[in-house]
Length: 67
Image (cartoon, rainbow, N blue to C red):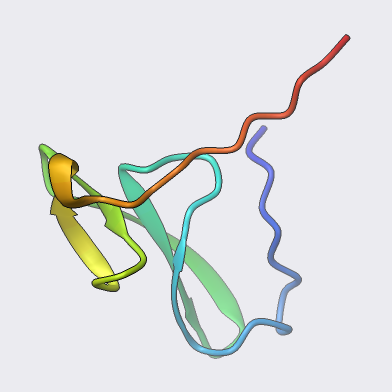
């Protein structure tokens, strides 16, 4: 199950990195988060606030380690 750091209604409307997947981003609208896929061969870029070519992307996925 994906881990989202969003609290429903708490995030301002806007575009956010998906902490689980660089090939998509989260759009918050009216307090609801929506996962939006990036076009093929692109990744989310927080600098550009859009999907960009992988070599231009600054996306990092954070994985929880289990013991």
